[in-house]
Image 1: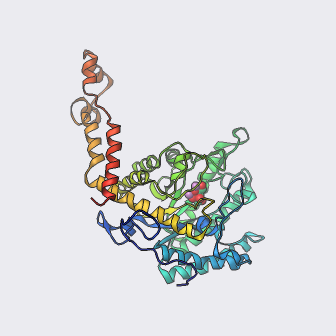
Image 2: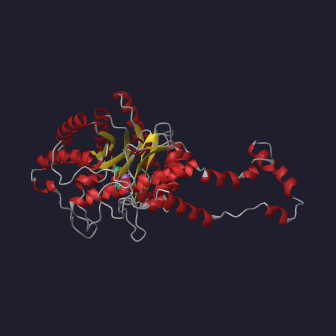
Image 3: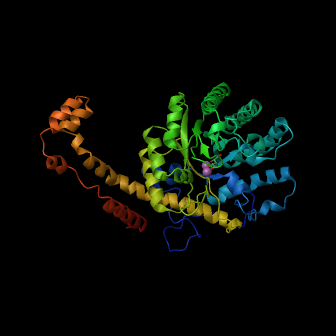
Length: 447
Ligand code: XLS
Ligand code: NI
Ligand code: NI
């Protein structure tokens, strides 16, 4: 292993002391939780576009990032050098997976052929490094949003040449997925939506993107790529309206077009927030539909409307997300990808280390608390009790399909209103929230 990065391998030090940064307080890779090692549950992943490429720009300011590979001026040399940095970073952070867009890795050429050749040089090196280190690709994807040609989308572009380009680009990405054994293949439709309804043929665009997804599935079959296809919902940004705006919308889309057997969802914390949901809401709805695929573990900011991709640090949120995750039996073909970057004022390499540590500890802590909630059947008990009137009498008859509206009428018609309300119980939200706090304090406090 190279020694390019100026820090030691991060180790588990336990919940010792308050100050973060010396080691993992909650992430103990080898420790078993619910019968499985933490590292096998959590499958953390480094996002190439953030950790290796992101300059920490914002809409008003240049990038502030200071990175050790900045001094390499030739773009291909830099692209190849970053692979060494990535693999050393994975090793030192004790992260087993990474994820990338095709265009994160290498500069574009004058034709797609040239671009593919640049990309393949970097893929060759990545393949060799994966072989040497045992690190794995959680997912890859194609960038169909940065280049000007994609100003109106890729698979929903009104322009056939651009649409064809998008198809050709995905073809190569699927070949890479197959070659590197990518566990999943992601479609995030940043520009697959519209800015203005009245110049957009929404039906035609949706038909196009559904057929495009079908072609991707067909090509994967043709080349023998067996990874899980994922759609990553987001409500907006950069478009005013992205078609797969949230989990329920994406599920409806997949079912409408008969794609739900081939696709699952990759859910991102910040996207949930932009859609006006909590992260746990998105994960819940995907899980219940049997379509929970993977997680982009990041956080939004209540004070700024953008997709700011902050590293996770909210244990309340990670606990509730991990609870849904455990009910799902984890993420067999997915993981927790840090689609996250340090703040613009956290511009040093050290902040990348601290950011990933924060994210890993936050989700490891969430997993610990969620595991205890599961063992104690705390939420399960609440639900069983709250819906228990459907376990007998008129409720059970209804669930068994034995009732019609006339039966309900007979049942209630002469009952005084007070009788009906007698069995309505308090939701006890304050108590539940406070109990979750107690779980967090007590489980993480080691009691
Ligand atoms: C952008 C998305 C993007 C996807 C991959 O908001 O989160 O980073 O995860 O294209
Ligand atoms: Ni994402
Ligand atoms: Ni995002």
